Amino acid sequence: MNLKKFLAELKRRNVYRVAIAYAVVSWLLIQIATQTFPFFDIPNWAVRFVVLLLGLGFPIAVIIAWAFELTPEGIKRTEEVPREQSIPRTTRRKLDFAILGVLVLAVAVLLFDRFRPKPQRDDGRTTEKSIAVLPFENLSRDPENAYFATGVQDEILTRLAKVGDLKVISRTSTQQYQSRPGNLREIAQQLGVAHIVEGSVQRAGDSVRVNVQLINADTDAHLWAETYDRKLAEIFEVQSDIALQIANALEAKLTGRER
Image (cartoon, rainbow, N blue to C red):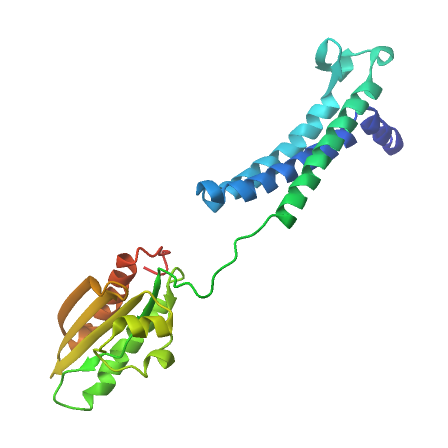
């Protein structure tokens, strides 16, 4: 069979129409999955699985269109249907109507996604998973240890900022406030956060005590508090644990890299 006859046979067996219909239906199913899966908290990998499944099904649909034919008696192998009894024209009409119907649905989905009202984010509303780390108080006798306390605050703030599910205010914005401020609610309103982290650092030789408190600014209630007595060499582990405990207390979603 030369190429011209082969292409003509593809057309006669409605392989082209089946391929187009399958592609349009697949696109519509992917759009539906993309729009509805997040609503039911279905993970993103499920959408990728649907795309993969539909992609694998495409050659199968084309092979079935080539090997089988729809007749009044049902589906039969093309070789078993005499050419004079073949009804590819009727099948083509059915496929055309099916493609047209799916295209109408596809246009409806596009228009719905384009013109449906989308929720607007209220910038004036405080995000529940928002936090500000205030300067840590230096309880050491040596004033130079204030730099060490600032370093502890910086490291905790940096680790929290890496958690994508949290809104963390920058150190530049929080440095204007003193340790142990008088009115946490007012500070939280000024910074636009729901929670405040405050604490103190005391250093004596190679020993360090870090006291940390996570406070709900609206209720002034402690959500989490801890005192760490460690050696100076363990300070990085302390900072990591503080950030992790704060994220857990705020029920922030952590990826494997953020843990």
